[in-house]
Amino acid sequence: MANLLVTGGVGFIGANFVHYWLRRHPDDAMVVLDALTYAGNLASLDPVRSNPGLSFVQGDIRTPHLAESLLRDRGITIVVHFAAESHVDRSIAGPDPFLETNVLGTHELLKAARQVWLEEGRGSSACRFHHISSDEVYGSLDLADPAFTEESPYRPSSPYAASKAASDHLVRAYQRTYGLPASITNCSNNYGPYQFPEKLIPLTIVRALEGQPIPLYGDGMQVRDWLYVEDHCQAIERVLAPEHTGQTYNVGGQTEQTNIDVVQLISRILDEAFESNPGLASRFPRSPAGRRGAASLITYVPDRAGHDRRYAMNTHKIEHEAGFSTAESFESGLQRTLNWYLEQEKWWRGVMDGRYREWMRNQYGNVVSF
Image (cartoon, rainbow, N blue to C red; front, side, top):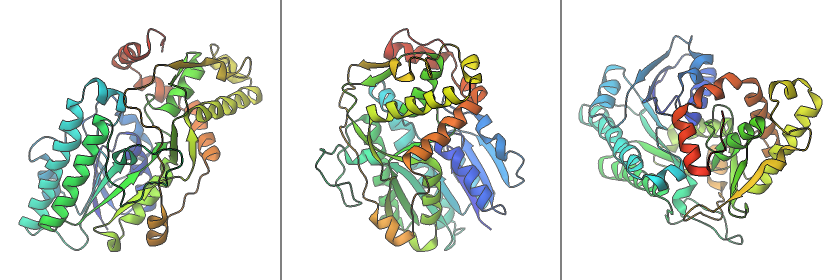
């Protein structure tokens, strides 16, 4: 039996990991630590709230000694660190929270693990600090470039990516200097249930359902590798096996797509859903899906400053060493994601409060009316 601390466990990937882990390891105990910022919603834990091994603590990872107390008092043996500011546009508009949370917050967690596990001798061979990072730390690829490997140099383009790169370096420094048992996964773009509608896929779905313009940066030809969130959770589970301590792994879906292709595929799947289920037109009367087509909402907007052109992940290492492979194709994962957003209208309407609407207006103009 393991005792886990999951930071950011009410956010998108964190909440999916909580569901996945408790389903797969029902006897484990888990503490979820989350600050409940704009993208956090306790309703994301509703499916597992009755699990007797699950507890929730509202708190900020930057708070001195908070994580230290949790590790000590709850007998934590595994930290899975998701908590982060992660939206690139927000980091460009205001970098400070990204440095404070992603760098200083990660450092507070590392100090806590070192103090409790190493200095106080409460650790064991089962202890692990696992850090969730991003493919964006590697920078941008040209179309003909080979995919990123674990040996690729760090060339972050945005304040967000720079803050994640710094946190990766801190984890490795604590591993090498103090002997902290740690590991890192750098993942490609995740998508799936419970994702806050500021990222491309849920933004496209929600905008299409509301009949609102779907903003697409520049020419829409930026390339991303897409990873279904449950496949990502499986990868983390495999990396947490003891033999992978000290390792870094790239995790990707091997599904490179341009942004315009992603939006057009979502539009097609949504059109098909409206055509096969007439009740959707009654629920979402402003949506053009199934009539003139959801793709009619695509609106090109000026490109983001410093926008990376392409990301791609070489996943040979995690496939070879940890036996990881994805279960979802991009289209099957998108279908599952779209079905979830259609079924969980209450959830996504609930998270889109006034602060978000104000930010969206500042970004894209007065085109949002959720």
